[in-house]
Length: 485
Image 1: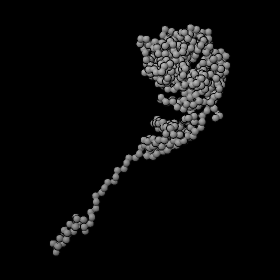
Image 2: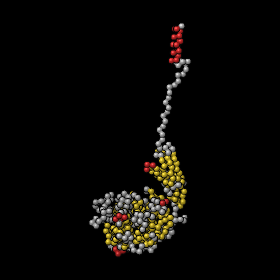
Image 3: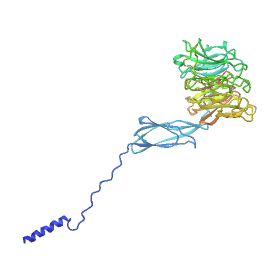
Image 4: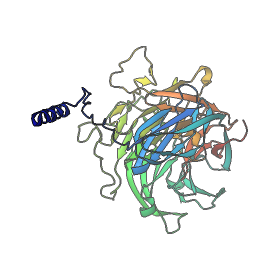
């Protein structure tokens, strides 16, 4: 009996070890799937609407950690740090229509792992220009400028005076009067002025005029103790360029570039077709754009040659020359790193040359070329010549004009829709026109309806960046917004 009992216990132990009753022992445990790491960035979808095909929006997104991105169309920005983002949209102009964004500014909060959204909708309306008279009875005005931020207008008069217009009133006493030493025959006279970039500190300004011997003279003077009067005894001659024989094509512009150097545009010496051959003569300062450094001007050394000028220490090539092949560059202007240089044509073409400020040694072609035409020849060698970015033909009986009056690229605040447009006129037609330059192409050519204003002699720009034009009638106009279509 005891053996039987032991046998039954042994069977029970064996069944327990085998799971008993033939049951499923189960499957081994499977670890849970790994979870993706929590998102640390988000996205912002910016949608632009209402613009015609081919017209870019102007949207800037700012956010945490100095984030900034400019957009020209609908776009989703990814991998953004969580936080609040500001979306600011600017008006854009195309084809004479200004498209205004709504809303102009908005904010969107980007959360980790999510996409925020913002929509900018543009609506179009035509922009129009009107001219308002600022001063009348000026004596042959040739130029207008002002120190940056100054509310006064400094108007250059050809007989040799600089007048101040303040709050619409022309002050009785000129800022400067050198009429006793200015030659005004032909195209001569006091032709332009430029304030030193450090005028607020040093009080220097520069003038461009023709003297009784018909030389082109560049001279530095200083403001006196009275801010409305120059010191006539402070004269420092900077440069004198002989201009014998003819009384036309004196050029007339001087201006400081963004690089701090002084640029001077001289005519080819006059006569028809450059009979003296100055345009292509690198040993002559006539028919050129000059570039000099006057920051350390002194009686013994009135200027230095800036580094980068194309012809330093070269025989029969003047080191002052920056560009050549010009006929009569009456006006030129800078816009950031771009140079807009208008050159008056001979019989057929008026031109505007546009290029990078650091492009040294360009040859604009005169008198091999007049615009993009071979001058006085069926064919010509264009090798090494820089052709204009924009030109127009005189047309029959000068229907389109005969003498370009170059202006400025607009960067003021009164007409923000027109930022970047270059304004110009023509002495013979008195129109006001503009275009937008992008790279080597020109678009948005437009003539503005400003009525009959007579011969436009020059443009000017005040201390706030607003534009003016002067006519042979002695009237100074300000360019502004028209409230009527």
